[in-house]
Amino acid sequence: MFFFDEPFVGVDKRTEAIILEVFDELKSEGKILLVVGHELGEAARKYDQFLLINKQLIAQGERTEVLTAENIQKAYGESVILLGRGTYI
Image (cartoon, rainbow, N blue to C red):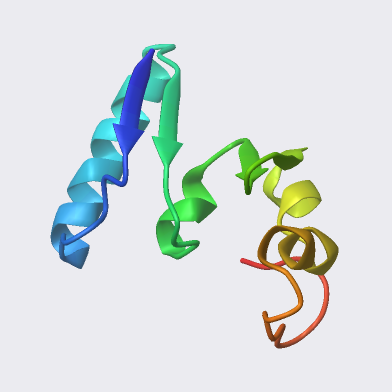
């Protein structure tokens, strides 16, 4: 099992791609990767499972189950302005 805390902070797109290649290699070897992140950018599309946490567990599962407008609102509160509808990312 590998734990990565904010691995994409302060890196450029080229370095992000290299990190994602390493993640793919580890995954293909049957390793478990736990990646903590606050930004739901392009890299998040590579993850199989998500935990949405804000002081408590909001949701867990696949991206389409977790990153919904309802769950994002639960996690971040009424101050969040949601653009569009449905699942995010």
